[in-house]
Amino acid sequence: MAETSYQYTEEQMPEKQPIEELIAKYFSGSILPDEKRILIAWLNESADNKAIFNQLRNIWQVSNPAFQPDDIDVERAHKSVMREINGRYLKAAPLIVWFQRAAAVLIIPLIILTAYQYYKSTGRDTKTAWQEIFSPYGTHSKILLPDGSTVWLNSGSQLKYPVRFTGSERNVVLTGEGFFNVQTDKKHPFIVETEKIKVRATGTAFNVEAYLQDTIAAVTLLEGSVDVVINNIKKEKLEPDQRLIFKDNSHEYELNQVNANYWCLWKDGILAFRNEPLKDVFKRIGRTFNVDIEVKDKSVGEQLYRATFEEESLDEILRLLKLSAPIRYKRIGRAQEDGNLFNKDRIEVYSSK
Image (cartoon, rainbow, N blue to C red; front, side, top):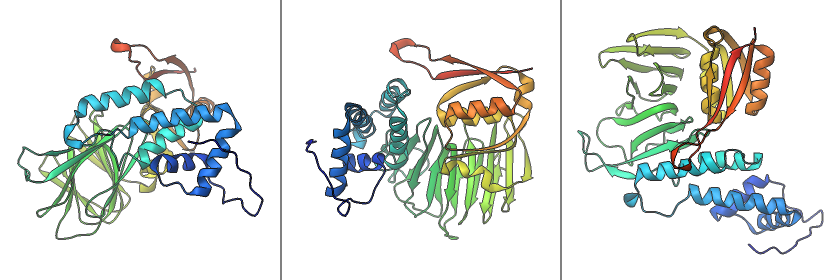
């Protein structure tokens, strides 16, 4: 990029935009001439700005590799990209952290980090190409499905779906957590398959939690109605503001009346907790910020907690938790593993009593 200096009169000054937005537009090739001049002026302000720009360019290039979907080794590519994100940029400046997350939310649905099209060799239609989208830890992604339905994928989640829906059902496969806003089509039910439960809808909005490492799976209904199939046998119909929790250990489930909005706010960057055990609170915080948080005292983990966090950093959230709950915590940091890789930051939580 040329580094010509520009000056504006007050009347010529274009509408102000966040610099992150201008950088994203520049990398995507959609930046307008006036916006480009503003970005160049910002670059000329300091060497730090140029350094940040170069780091963001590296993130963009990692997030947007030039490859043909059929040629990619998915597992290998995913490990490579996550090594770059977790190892190289985890402790970057706030602007870089913002851009990393924005890239995942805005770009991954278009040129997916680990996306590929492949042909199913199972009982499904082998002539239909499927896509797999992975939302890296510490980010969330928004996806527009072929039928116009919208899905938000939470941190560490993946979704498989066909490039076009055929047959009598609209089937997708979820691992992790996703919020679904389903286009109405009563003749072609929308099916969300997970390892533990299956959700059937025709046009509604609901949240599904199905992380493989968790001992529960849950469905929370925001509007409309859905059928939840448990163990491929039992079917339970949910009404708005109901939450079904399936317990994998006992193969039992419970149906609770809740405020469904609180379980869907994560897609808007808001962490809302309403009388949840602290062990679950820390689990969700860890996924959101891509850190391992271990509760060392069982009594602490079982205590109920109520709070809402919006735009706070991890350090701010931990500080507020320490003030409002009987806890203390210790940062362990990141340890180097084989192959010169580093694991996640680790935090241990203890009782303050």
